[in-house]
Image (cartoon, rainbow, N blue to C red):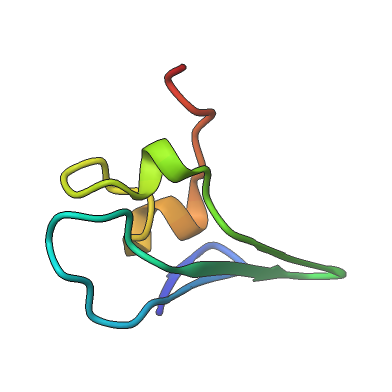
Length: 64
């Protein structure tokens, strides 16, 4: 969990095998709004960072 201003970001994911896309759900909670989503498969691949704490607060569009 991490905070940025009045927002809280939470990534929820089980331990992956290091080869397949990481399973995860991202939540962002702020004043008056809650968002929950699963990042696109390409962003869940090892090394892409789609399931980390910074992505929970500042999601970026898929590269492809």
